Amino acid sequence: MKEKVMEAAAEALLFAMGEAIPVRDIAQVLEQDTEDVRRILRRMMLRYDEEGRGIQIIELEDAFQMCTRPSAYEYLIKMTHRPKKHSLTDAALETLSIIAYKQPVTRAEIEKIRGVNSDHAVNRLVEYNLVCEAGHLDAPGRPILFATTEEFLRTFGVRSTEELPALDPEKMEEFKIEAEEEVELGIEEDS
Image (cartoon, rainbow, N blue to C red; front, side, top):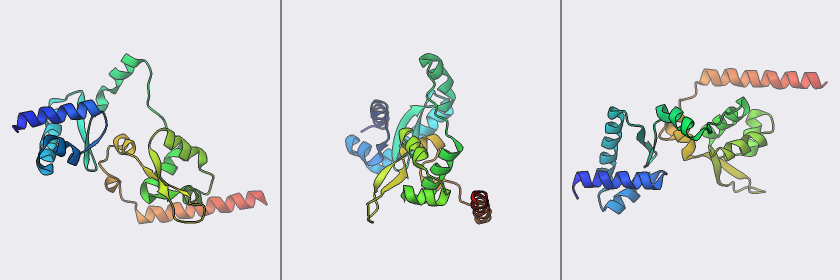
């Protein structure tokens, strides 16, 4: 199959599906080698970027998706008159961070780290499709495990959770001390 034909077919697949497609599935449909398809898609990504198109191809773990370029978002808003951008509270961001770095994680583990009930934050993150149920822990009660989604990767502009910034051990120790001090203050106020 000629490369131009493969590009056109891959572009049509990505456009029509509207979601991330594993590269192996694209390769299977095109009856091509996975590495050849990955190379072609990455070249298309670069060309779209260089030409400043309103759409882009993004890579999410081992899948590719065609989507609107963020710089064109304001025009979509004008067309639809309904902004869809969700804003996250500090509690939701804190909960999302815990899930992203500790996944898969149970609600109880999240609450142990945060020190407060996290039902609302977790439910909001599931509603926004930033986290999802990733199974059940093999423990009494079989608690739900939560993990991040492809939407999380898209929203934060990373290919995989491995690209998340590393946590600074000194900062982690500072956070731990601050949390312990907050707990102590809470105990003293209750007395």
